[in-house]
Length: 271
Image (cartoon, rainbow, N blue to C red; front, side, top):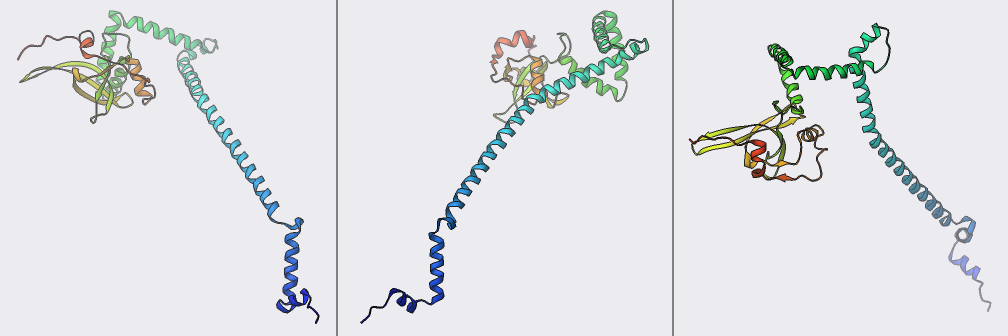
C-alpha cells in the first residue's frame, strides 16, 4: 500500500489558500531583506541618540546664555545709570558753555561737581547754616513740599558724615514680628521711660517696611537690641537691596560693652 505524501496530507487538513499564505509568510519572515525588526530598532536607537544630543546642546546653550545675562546685566545697569547721571548733572551747566561757544562734553559735569563741593564748604560755615535754616523754614511752610523734603532729608542725613546730624545712629536687630523672627532696623534716638516700678532706657528703632523712606518706629529696651558689626551705610545697602547685601556671617556685640560709648549713659532720676 502506497504511503501518502506529506503534501497530500497537508492539503487534506488545510485548504490550498491557507498553504499559500503560510508559505508567503514564512518566506517573508525568513528573508533578511524584508525583516522589519532590525532596521526599526536601529532607526529608533539612532533617533533617540540624536534627540539626546540635541537636548544636551540646547541645555548647554541656554545655561551659557543665562550666565552671560547674569554677568552682563549688572555691568550694563551700572554703566547705563552712570552715563545717565553724567548727562543729567552735565545738563545743569552745559547750556551756559554752549552759549559761550564751548562744546566740550563733561565740562558741565566737572563744573557741577565743583559747585556741589563749594556748597558743602559754604553750608559748613555760620552764614551758610543760617541760610539753610531759613530755606528749610520756608519749605516746611509749603503743604506738599514739606513732606517730600522731610523724607528726602531723612535719607540724606542717614548717610551724612556729620556726626552731629539727626541721622541713623547704628544698625540694630530686633525680635519682630513673631518669636524666632528678626528684623533689621536703625537706632535713631534713646528715651527714658518713667514707670511706677522705676525708669527704663528705651531705644527708638526705625524698621523700614518700604525700601527706606517708609517704616515703623518701635521702642525697644536697650538690653533686647542686638547690634551687629555693620555700619549705617551697610545697613542701608541691605535694606535697598532687599536683603541681598547681607554678609554671610554677622557678629553680635554684647550690650554691656557698647552701652556707654554708643548709646550713652543717662542720669536717671529716681521716681
